[in-house]
Image (tube, rainbow, N blue to C red; front, side):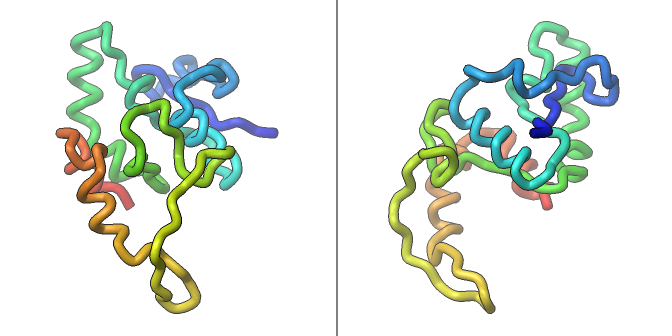
Length: 138
């Protein structure tokens, strides 16, 4: 099993990459995101909590100023729109339950019919950085 790498601080420096196994015991949402990345073959995972060095003010500032490039370069973005905190997990992943949702069919896909309303009403949507995350992520 190949686990994704998580970066710490400046992700361009490979010596700052962490093996995901070091984060076992991390909050459930992060463990679920690691699981998703591993299952779909994403080799690296950016987790703000770990990738932005809060102890080095210059590095933190530089990283925050680069978030447009980080979000814009991501292959995909996983948001935890249903949880209240990092311990909530991602619904439907590794045993985390999810509420039954009304769906609609778009082509051959079924998608939640009110996903936009759910995301707008989520705690995720109340955080300051999520505007940039939503706007710039693919």
